[in-house]
Figure 1 (cartoon, rainbow, N blue to C red):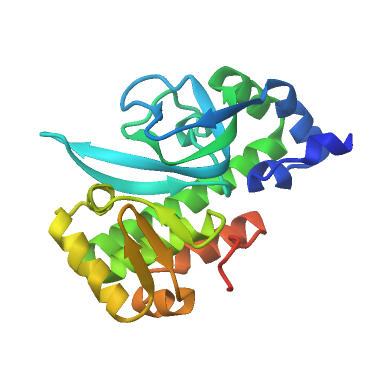
Figure 2: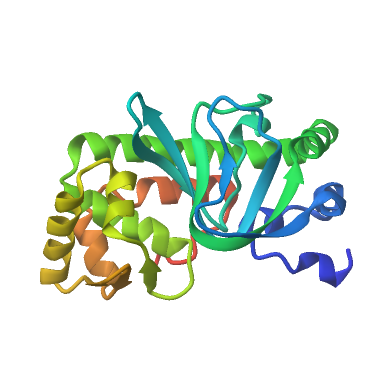
Length: 242
């Protein structure tokens, strides 16, 4: 395979063998993805699947009345469009960029054709979907049983795994939507983490000061899904062991 074809940062694309990557490469278009670009709308056919190179996509469920909660995230470790991998056409959830970035997009039709052609490509992408379902299960468990500051610690670790640097650009309002709570609750939870020297929160930014401390604060809610990703894909999330 020509060297230039291996310049992907996306872990899924990097992990594909030469023949499977050759099926996708002619159809991959590099795109810039700004906040709050909507990748998928709920109950609407998915036109494109994106393999993220940077930034972060949020998969969000919506209740009646416009109440939202994040059910999953995807970054350079994965892709959007799980429904396409599973043979469907649409998702009950919406997906949008929560941190601006870049990626490679492919039409759903082209991806499905490649999956139909290669059993090894299908197996690889299904392994990612299984890892993503493990992440969603951990989110449900944390939402049901963890304290808000524990959930926030877990969420910050997950974002940290998928980004460069230690500073995350997010507002309290956005965090409140992601965690399904009111803004004052986020303020209190951040103050708890700041008081323990784990993060520093400025206007619109959160800087992680102690990853190990956040892992302890997460109280077991972080790590299981990340280990499942490693088991299934053979790649550790970038900062899992830091």
